[in-house]
Image 1 (cartoon, rainbow, N blue to C red):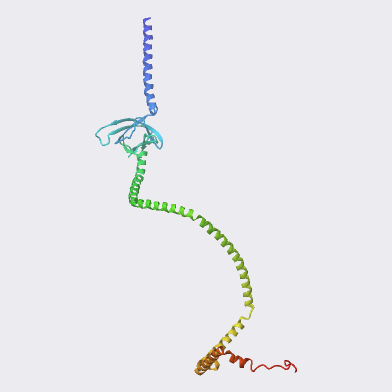
Image 2 (cartoon, rainbow, N blue to C red; image 1 turned 90 degrees about the vertical axis):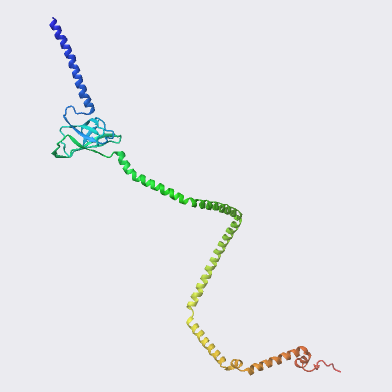
Length: 323
């Protein structure tokens, strides 16, 4: 009876111990599973030295061609070393890693997470150690800074150029202000001038309207005149212009011959121009005629009595009365 009770008590303790051990094992593997470890696939450990891990933490993924092959197992710091950060990588045992393999620290998305990208290197050459070459890929922020830095420099240069340009325009600003003031005064003067000249402008507009009407009427009259000119042109076209020109040419030749004869002293006009005696006789006759006219005005009865009426009037026979 006592022995049976002992076995029952031992059996209970065994059950409790088994449950505790099982819980610890499950907890261990559960934590590893939650961290991303593949519990059922064995893994190899590799080591990488970095100068700066830029926020890399334990359990960050290890990727190859976009597929996760392991986790960051542990991170240690060795102060004073050239590359003080030691990162232990847990990589699936089925992944073949060759010489010159690289563990590239890179960004895991735009939220700032980190991951390690594995470059297996030359897989035909076996890796002789468990240490990989560590490299750091430029982050998104770094890339933005690199891209933005030339733009920032250009903007800075542009700002300096604008400042210099503004400084150079300072003297011009005063002149521009003076010009604007002058333009303002001119505008005021123009408004006043327009106000005072409004009636004159109205009168000019009316005169222009009347002038336009007169021009229209003149245009109509010109049309009639042009029609008449066209009729005259047609008449001239039909006329014998050649004969008229020939007659005019003959007349011109005759006139030329007459002028030559006059210059040579031929004919009455030629003698009058060349002979002085005829000129003197004409002057003498003119003087005598003038004297006669003067005497006629002085003694008109003398010339009227003898020249116009003759002797005394005689009575006609019919006027004598019979005795």
